[in-house]
Amino acid sequence: MSKTYKIATIPGDGTGPEVLREGVKVLNAATSKGGVKLEFTEFDFGGARYLRTGETLPDSAVEEFKKFDAMFLGAIGHPDVKPGILEQGILLKIRFALDQYINLRPVKLYPNVETPLRDKGPEHIDFVVIRENTGGIYTGHGGATRLGTTDEIATQLMVYDRRTVDRCLKYAFELKKKRNAKDKKYAAKPITLIHKRNVLTYCGDLWYRAFEEMGKKQYPEIKRDYNHVDAANMWFVKNPEWFDVAVTENLFGDIITDLGAMIQGGLGVASGGNINPEGVSMFEPMGGSAPKYARMNVINPMAAIGAAMMMLDFLGEAKSAQAIEAAMIASMKKMKSQAAGQMGYSTTDVGDMVAEMV
Ligand code: IPM
Ligand code: MN
Image 1 (cartoon, protein in one colour):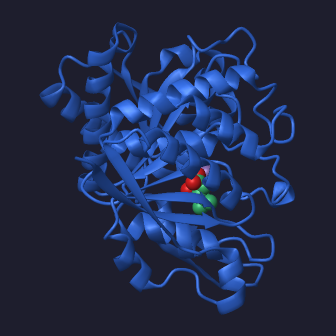
Image 2 (cartoon, protein in one colour):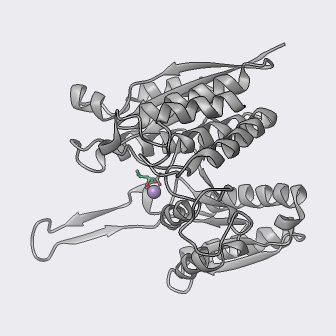
Image 3 (cartoon, protein in one colour):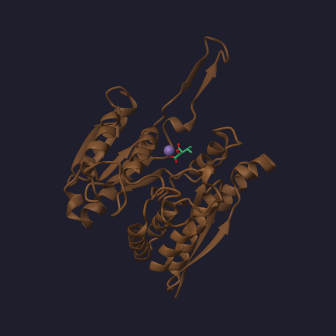
């Protein structure tokens, strides 16, 4: 008996469609042996549609998305559209409207992938950042007055409530518990809360107390650690092997996961999931639309393939997900580089290679 999952795809802008196509190719290969069937429905939201129609993402689309098992996104961002419009109107709107409150970003260096960190290898870089994905400064509280004058004032507030903090921490502790059970090398490491509680004495304190309380009461067997975000940056570079599961608020998570992407080999290989554990989740390569590489068949689809793997894993198809990861590792071993245009293969070649090996 075969199980069918309905997947909404948004190829989006720039190189988005090219990398998404390879992700879909690999997904089809991974599920072709039976047991699982994927049914894709494509949506054309993105910069081109916005320029044509003035529409970013209608509310009816959000309702439509709720009927799917998962979503798969290429990239959103267009050079002819003012920054903020597509980000807020599409990407952030999806995250908020579908309450995708976890942004899961694995930072894993695969064999044969180059890291800018000298003397660090796959044994040192294998952790996950859990970024709170719906609160904080991203909620858009704030405003500007005396606009355009020399006395202009602007505020942008970091907003958190206990429920939002607790549900994110819960997800992080549960993931840590799972990883500890899977491998002793993970169990030896703590879960790390990252914030800036020496300065953000209200929000930082809320996160810290919630973390300590939940850890003590519900997960006493899990070691806890805390880093200020500036120090965490330093440790990501100097001692990435100290991390296993790191949990943090939205903006800090945005910033440190770009650093994470670099140490794992760049945006060509970094994937993420916008997760609502009780709802519809969306998986995406972390890189943007990279317009300068669009339609050249040179962009690395590995991050999109990694996102596809995360999606299968999230859907409960762990075996197929593992098969994709193994094929990714084997393919990366053959590639000259993970950088766009320097792979020794084209975008479609890489997709073919991974698809053949799953
Ligand atoms: C990311 C991106 C987005 C964010 C932008 C495009 C709104 O940088 O997914 O990390 O800030 O969350
Ligand atoms: Mn970002």
